[in-house]
Image 1 (cartoon, rainbow, N blue to C red):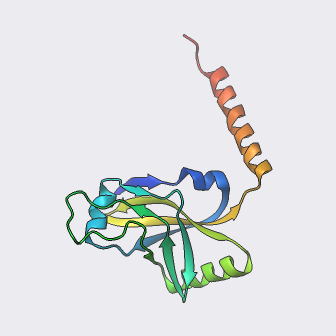
Image 2 (image 1 turned 60 degrees about the vertical axis):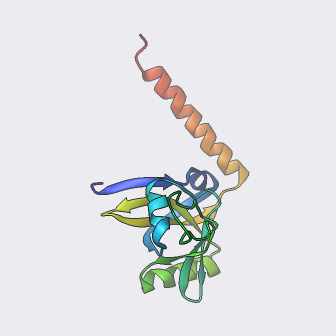
Image 3 (image 1 turned 90 degrees about the vertical axis):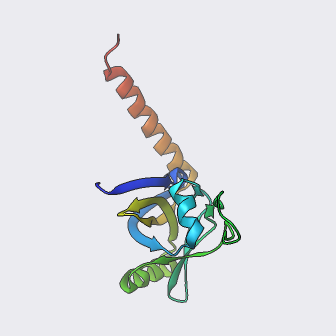
Length: 151
């Protein structure tokens, strides 16, 4: 993945949801937000995306105000527009309204000096699904521990 620098990931999303599809989209930002994101001052944990009036918006994503900023700093939790193709938006509208999927931000990264957001079309996991995932991860860890050379 040449030219890509990951700035933030949402580890909680893969734990709480089954991710069926992933979309790469641009994000509409104000001036100092870009500098703050480049410093890694973004939190995706509570974030989600929604489709309103044929547009996709990113909500509850916290971008800390830029330290050297001035009055041009904006609200850290403001709603930000995501930039997708029309056919992708129509697909998302169908999935979120009819099938009951959620849109969850998975990671934020720089691609050719542009900030991109990866959103996932997600189905919620039940508690027993989460337990199964933890059991699989634990089993893999044990196998790796047994296979690794002991010094």
